Image 1 (tube, rainbow, N blue to C red):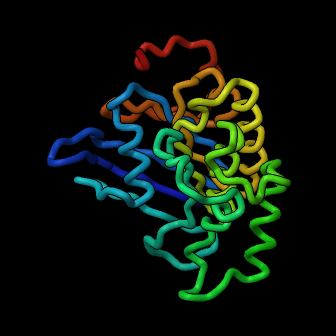
Image 2: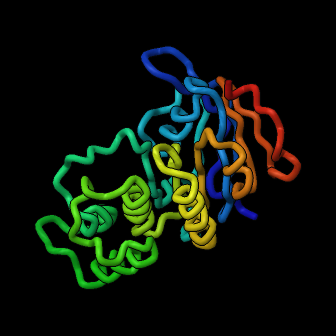
Image 3: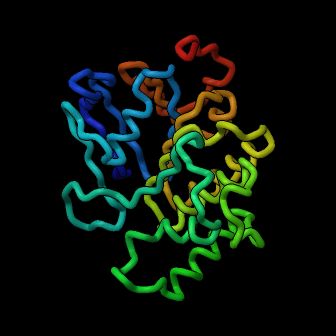
Length: 234
């Protein structure tokens, strides 16, 4: 199977300091890659490189869009759900506008949203179980509702790779389980790359695992990994 993303010899960091050294990783279509590791070990740095938010110091990231019949390094359609703590809940925006903003790259300058775009946003809102909350400000939502809104924003553009950074933070276990159930459904249409500290829950859903602690260790399957003591996280 042709890979979706190839990471080769990647080193990256900030202000001249290397945080992640010589990482190698392959992500395939419909993969569910779990990422674990200690704080400061390079997990978020890895995500930022994939998202194009920082440039590697060394190495390369090759993208192979599934709808591209040629070759090259054109980036994939990406969806991103950031850490909960990075969201400004006081920002005056509704559920409807938040989900629709995930289509901003498709919008034309000074033009209104098309009927097709609005229908797409409504279908995603329904899929996320948010019917009836369209006009509610995000500041009035529960933690679980807000995570589903942000997930809806991330997937409304039909990404080929969905990147999630600690999506289970600040939500309770039942809500986290519902979130993972949604991700299991979404894997039929995209690959998933998810950072989490909840290793047990992650291993119930992920099909491959990357352990990131300055370097990267890759497990192509999670079979047999449940129940291990991951001292690297302490």
